[in-house]
Every structure is written in C-alpha cells, then in structure tokens.
Length: 361
Image (cartoon, rainbow, N blue to C red; front, top):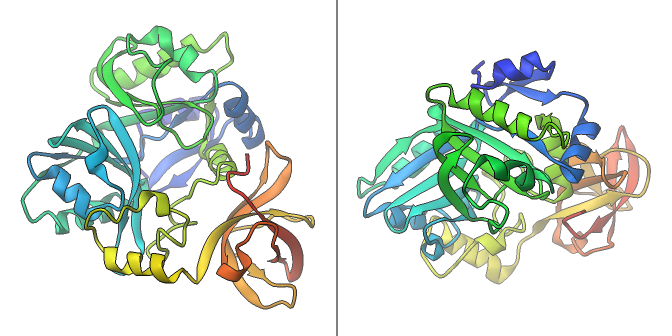
C-alpha cells in the first residue's frame, strides 16, 4: 500500500486504517458520527493526498480539455474552477473531475479520482493529438481538505490569501503557514464550506502545514476526519461517488449531471448524449429516504409494490445529521418523480421508501 506524507500522523492519532485506491488511508478516528458532526458544525481536516492531479500546458491545452470534458472550460478565467466529467465513447463516464484555470488558455490543473489516475491519464493522452504538454504531478502533490462552517475563520491567520471572502469554486496561490506556492481552493466534497489546499511536500512542508492547522484550530476543537465521514457528508449533499453512483456505464444525463453537460461545444460522445436529451433517458439517479426501518446499501435491488425490479441502490447510509436512512439509486424514469413510493430489498424483505429531492440536507 502507498502512504501519503500524513500516514504516520494518522497512525499516531490512533486512526482506524484501511486500503483505499491503493493507499493506506484513515477511515475514522473518534467515530464516523462524531467526525461527521464536527464537520457539519465546526471544522475538520481530511487527508485526500491520494487524489490525482494533472497539469496541462500550452496553446492546445484548452482545446484538449474542451474535447475530453463535458462542461465548458472556455468560461474559466484565472483563479476559477469547475466541476466536469470525462465522457467515454459510448456516453458513459470515465471519471468526474475538477478543472482549475491557472492561466487562461495556457495552464490548467485537472483533479481526478484516486482510483482512476492511470485510466484518466491514458484517456486524455489518447486525445492529445496536438502534443499538449502534460504532467502527472499526483505523487508529489499533497491535498488537505479543511471543511466546515468555521474552517476559513480558523485558517485565515495562517495566510495572506483572503480565504474568508473566497467565492465558491475560485482559488488563489500564495504563502500558507510559511510555505510558498500553496494553492487554496474554495471547493470541497462535504457541502459544509471550507477550502482545499494543494502543495508539494518539499523541506518538510507537509508536517509544517498539518501542525500549523491543528495549532490554529486547537482552541476551536478542529478534528482530523476519516474517509467514513467523508462518505456520509457527501451523501447528505447528494454528491456522486465514482464507482458507486457514476461509472463507465452511466451517462451524465442519467446521473442528473445535465448541468455540467454543455452542447455549445464538441466533446466525446456529444451526439449520443444529445440524443438522450432529445429522447429522454430510461433510468434516472434519484435520492430516496427510507420509510420502513432498514439501511439501504450499494447494489441492493429497488422494486415496485408488486416486487418487480426497477433499479438498484448505488449509495446508502444512516444520515447522522437527519437521523434517518437515505440513499441514491437508479430507477426506471417512470418511478423518478418526487414522493413516488419504491421498495428496497433488504435481506429478502421489501422495505418501503420514497423518492425525495436532493440534496437531502
């Protein structure tokens, strides 16, 4: 298993560790519910250094991004970021990602999922017919997500970058905790506010930044957070997890990602996805909450009142904030309207649920 520069810290803090995307990662420290509440109500620190980062540089960089992603990256100016996806040739999703515009028309950073680094690199390289300069900086890039309503307040004394007033999906580079060339981004996967910080671990930068954050947040009770709470937090906000809710066989329109699919430009499988928009899709990703007692889990069958299979659960949990069981799943479009009753098969029993609006929270 690979380690991040913070793996030793997690072990020293008594984290429950497990393999994730080839890395030895913390799943929880004080318990998922406790960590979840810390992020929703205060602030928490996630080590997400396992994520992948690519730099695309030069004249053809924007054109390449436009051809391989579904969103319109030409709208990005310096210091802006956007959520997007890489469609495959059948209209499925190679990965979802963030696109950062470092220098308009010239330098971009793509942030991809840890388990898809090699796959995404090869996919983009396949379309790199103009020899755009590409650098995979994943192994040397540290990424910490400091999330929660008090996160920016805690971190502001550590930097001259105005993070208190940083708008959602913007970023800036500067000195952070005495470390130069740190990228601070108002993004995250929790819907609780906060920032993500990218930096290279040179001259002990990782330890310096980690220690500075916990020192700054000591009085406020900042906590380290594992991947378990990351999953419950993102699910409450209805954020898709690659490999669960979206994959090579789900289209952006089926997944409710029409808002990041722009037909004002040409991109991989545009014709197929545009046809889906015209004709409608046969299934849709919906949010649902359980009415009967039971927790929906990935791959559980979803059925109608007669017991006919109409879909499957992609993500599910007992929501720590709402104190009820919630889930995401694909269902036949005729069952996708809000308040539609559906049934989740849990241990051979059909448990009643209803389709609700997402985000859940």
